[in-house]
Amino acid sequence: MDKKQQNSTNLELIDNTGLTPLQQKAVGLLVSGKSITEVSNELKIDRGTLYNWIDKITFKAYFNKQCNEVKNDTFNGLMGLYNDSVKAIKDSINSSNQTLRFKAAIWLIEQLNNLSFDETDPIEMIKKECIVNNLDFDFSTSFDENKYKLLLKENGLKDK
Image (cartoon, rainbow, N blue to C red):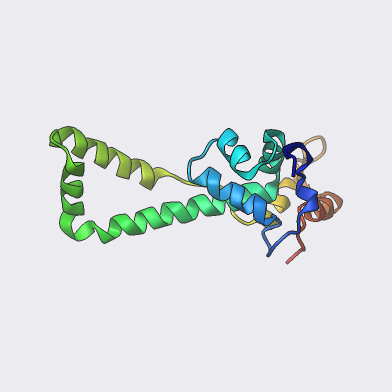
């Protein structure tokens, strides 16, 4: 199929992510560190299509969920190395310059511990998007039910 003809609406949605298998694969590739261009080329889709997917709430939620899983897997892997004080940070990451490698490894672990990702539940993301601040009147908030239903429909989701 021609890249320009690829369209997310042609594909069947799976499970409750609101994403097609191809969109889920795109998330996996992006989480693995591939660029927009690499992902669009590998999936044989137009970059514009990929950017449209990235703007979808369901895509963002699934991306955040996958990033959290990578973070948790990384954290669990590091905890498994704890007994050997991370084996002197994997023998100072097999370096001849142990001081530099050790400091780099400590910095990396600190950075990973400080990572956080946004909401992973697309329905919760939609709900937050539907809260309206009534600043002109009494500074209260209200919930836009019509917008909520529309966003659920647009993203192929059902209310819990």
